[in-house]
Image (cartoon, rainbow, N blue to C red; front, side, top):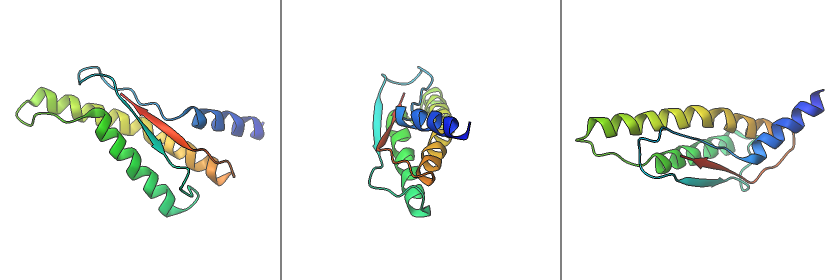
Length: 110
């Protein structure tokens, strides 16, 4: 059973990190976050991946006109939702790395 769960987790992680957001912001976008160069079983590798995902979330959700409260709220909602979803998938990628499985990238989508 444990091997089966590990395989399922690996397949989920291999499929990539897919973040969807409220359609209130600009057009659909996606950003590939590559991490084949990182050792996700180390603290520094995990931290670097989290920073890359954070930048991808910001890029996917875009910027808002600070003078437009609705745009600002939509952007913040997008970032909050994308960050919440990504944290689960990043944890899965790190767990896979601790189990000796190496994956190359994930995708952040809006």
